[in-house]
Amino acid sequence: MKKIQVYSGIGALPSGSASDNITEGCMVLEGGAFRGVYTSGVLDALMEEDINMRCTVGVSAGALNGVNYVTGQIGRSGRINLRYRHDSRYVGAKAIRRNKGIIGFDFVFGDMDRVPHLDKKRFMDRSRQFYIVVTNLKTGRTEYLEKNSGIPPLRAVRASASMPFVSKPVIINGTPYLDGGCSCKIPYQFAIDKGFDKIIVIKTRYAEFRKPVSTRQLRAENIVYRNYSQFAKALINSNADYNRQCDELEKLADEGRIFLITPSEAIDISRLEGDMEKLGHLYHMGYNDAKANLPALREYLSR
Image (cartoon, rainbow, N blue to C red; front, side):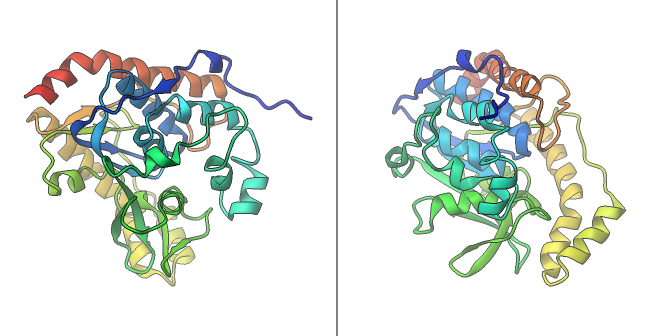
């Protein structure tokens, strides 16, 4: 059997369970495919420090990270990506064949042999809210599906992380959905509208990053999603919307209304990055950035 490449430092990742202590407020998690390994490191550090927010809202890779944050399983997200990135059941031919998309969600949510099983009982505990961001193909609008609202929550996470162009829509209660990032890449406004006083936002791009607009991509969106004109429109506007969100987030952080954690250096990671040492470095960057931010974060939460 062919040996699968894994991160050389996989054995040194933290492990354990977060406490049951709840921190009032909302955790907002951006997506970004394998850039989400940064978020895994941040969340592990925060769980070790007993920062377990009452509410979590995640989009795409942020939703996948959010699952293990809500269950309090320290190190689980990191181990999945840093051990199984090159397993074709997770990313590759078997994933495409079984899941009709680039990511093998059946594998992720199943019982992996080298990673602790998902604590589904703790995941469904009503003491913590978890909102999963998806995009409705029919309307092009963002929807926020809560794990205890009667929808199948792990199917909602699958929809949230199903990238356009390379994934089939995920049907929930008769409605087709795709990646939440198609219509809302950083769902901080949701947390504000919910009335949360304390909001932590974890981004997967460095603070100064802004997205360009590609005319070639615009043509592709109109062609591939010609039967979903509102969804195509959301995709076309998504980069400009992201840039606006980044500008507003910086303003809100400067005003002390939200606490923003961003990578301390530029991230040279592709959406489906396969260099395991780069991914391992990214995880530790997130972990160390969170630890470095702890004094300021505790001061923010105590106000």
